[in-house]
Length: 205
Image 1: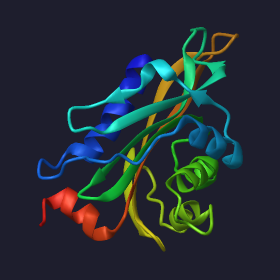
Image 2: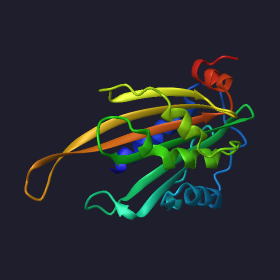
Image 3: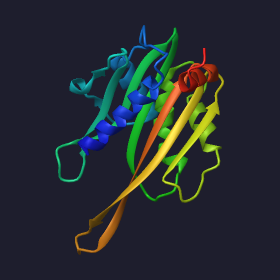
């Protein structure tokens, strides 16, 4: 699970730094108190993992939130609640989130992600309605039978891109019957505008 967590955090960093023509400066602060307050307001458990903070060469900062009350299986590894990466692109802020959780099936169900999307909206700020991000994606069409999907949404004060992926593993219950455990990841990046997203994606000036 540590490898999965590291992969998700790398994905979040790559989502922000893939375009070589943009640089980070004056990072949108990831204040621990602000993160804790957003978690409480969204109804999510967890605390900032101080020893997992990352600053990459471009200056983007990543913080990790874990739930110390829950671990992966029989390990001592606390469950990942969120990886949060922040920075600015030419003076406009951008915030990216990597979420991962156990889910009931292989199909996207936005209700599974409501608290996490509310958390993202609260931490980004600027939204009058904390459920705006959740509502925007919950109205999107959900493809059937795909392991990876991506959506975009124009919000009142920002532009958001969400990428969902699914994986499953074979386990055995106490009676040694084979069961499938489903996990899903959601990468969410909130840009100041669609123009900022397109510049990041295509390197437009």
